[in-house]
Image (tube, rainbow, N blue to C red; front, side, top):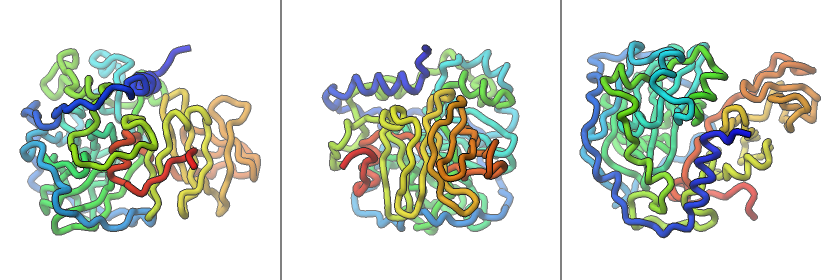
Length: 381
């Protein structure tokens, strides 16, 4: 049976946990790369999304917590236009099936962003399904998160500040020059401090798996950016599987898990929890309660990643398990069958109901525990 790319990466990471921490400074050697599109002169205001009631408390930035690792825009964000994307057939001529991609779908618009490209740019300002979004990737933390770029009715564009907050990517917006933490999704310095970005569901998977499930997808093209995919080397490729963990040397270490274990990080108000990828994969389906959030985590074998939902529908909390039919979940309360990939009820009393998909980014444990020092770990006492 074929082992998918993400599981293979996890196994490789697990094998590397015994390697002693190296004093690498990969972040400090950023160099200018592909020239990106210019910052738009004007932006269009669209309605701001409803504030997330599960958003974390406002962060207070302490002295010394911002670490300057590169100059502003040394890592150039991409300002995407439709002509930078190609369809699945053309994308497959550029990218191999085992290429790791960050992927999402909004409405009928499915897109994939190769991690090799993201490691050179870290932020893609894009519009997907008519929604202004920021595709963000922090290689140090192995964290991929998509944000709505509209805050209080104003559309923002983002760049890479060059700073790190507890080893995590710090973005800045061009309109107000506010600093934003990627893993917290919150403004931590500037005029919009305390504002929360709405997070949209996305996954990390292999290009071959994604295009098979979403054949109408488009993928960010290296050629359209003036490069050849075969010539692009992820500068963090060795870091992902090395003993090095982050850039800062003064962060407290949490030894509940090996430092570069991959976990799914979730926040519900003041509650933070890490779900080890290995545990979720072994259990297949996890029904949990995180504060006020009834959460459902499903390991999708086809995509080789974890899908996260709010396990509520029709004003009731549901408990799920795999059914006897591949790809379908069954809830214990109504015996309804649900499509695991879409969260839609396909047969039974709740047919037509849909679960709300949530963001549950994969991230290295050391980075998550540094950002969320009060986190607990699912499956541990």
